Amino acid sequence: MNPRFLQVTAGACLLVSLTLAYPRAHGQADRPHAYTGARIIPIGGPEIPDGVLITRGGKMALVGPRVGTPIPADAEVHDLAGKVVMPGLVDTHSHVGGGSGGDGSAPIQPDVRIFDAVNARDTGFKRVQAGGITTLNVMPGSGHLLSGQTVYLKPRNGRTIDDLAIRLPDGSFAGGMKMANGTNSIRSTPFPGTRAKSAALVRAQFLKAQDYRDKVKAAQGDADKLPPRDLAMEGLVEVLEGKRRVHFHTHRHDDILTVLRLAKEFGFRVVLQHVTEGWRVAEDIAKSGAPASIIVVDSPGGKLEAVNLTFGNGAALEKAGVLVGFHTDDYITDSRLFLRSAALAVRAGMSRDKALYALTMAGAMMLDLQDRVGTLAPGKDADFIVLSGDPLSVYTHVMETYVDGVRVFDRNNPADRLYAVGGYGAGRDQTLHLDCFDDAYQGAHR
Image 1 (cartoon, rainbow, N blue to C red):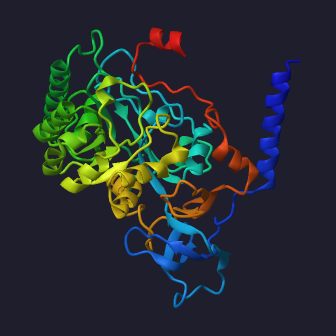
Image 2: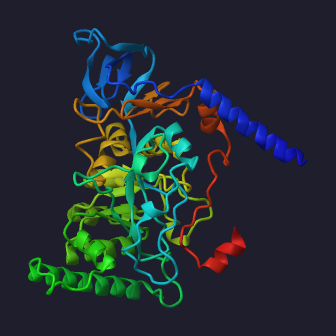
Image 3: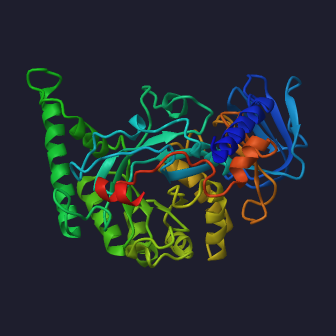
């Protein structure tokens, strides 16, 4: 038998045994839990040097200084002296789960739903937990003008996408719409060959969506007058009506302005994603009111339109008055290193408060989840992380990650630690399909 097979099998068995030896149910019961003695960074208010966080039933019940804050008599108390507690991080742009969106049949595919392709058991979610990320926007790739509907998730220890998905009040999955411009979507027919043609195709589709929306309204529920159901148009109508926010991949300053032009023309809500040359048009972005989710460390040897990436992008956008968030674009930036995005941005001039806000509340606002996550406050979901030190220090580790009050990552658990410190292959059991090339190209270059 192949010795390598024996080695891998033994490692898998070790992981199973370690997982069984370190149960993960901590914090799941309705019984209150009090986390005391930590330095608390609530984001929504001043830091608390010696604080207490009380959770119950998956929600935060109380946040305050340890002295003077009543702890329920039946609470399980956890001493976190010397640690730092802050809200779980929000990643507005990720590709974990191995999902694939649109294919090569058309450049615009708003009927595609990424949640049909996300593998909830992908070990990439273990890296997400190890990085302290508790909310994420999982998207299809960027090789299309419109590659499909995104899904907002929490990295719970679930079996299926239903266990991870964040639900809207009507029970449907929360999510946005992924769009892109620049070089990614420029290829042979039926895809556009130029930037101008890319914008023209987008405009044509939104005009069709407006017409479809108007016909549905005019029918007033009369089945005989309704147009034939069109799933693609339904997705775009949700965008037009503001129910689904567009997450727009864009790098170059002229591409950014094209996005702002399209959003104004058709009235859709947009989050600018990547925004590599945002510093060149920061005032224009601020005037539009669009938020910008930036990537601080892009892939080495990446596309030429990202050549002007600078650590000072966040500082320039902050100075102009733009709401700034961060994202990983995982695997472009490993989810385990998400805190470093803020640290590098601060090093280049971004304020500490806004950088921490960008990791948490700003991202929550970009996903329309600000009432649930992003700060430590009573009534919000009990999503928080325990750090070994200051969040912007290179020496700091994520020690524990909690989602809805449940501890999903514990660095003291050897199985979890393996995902936290393992090399590039740790937690990578899916091949990501970014839709940037045709199938023949990808098959030859995997």
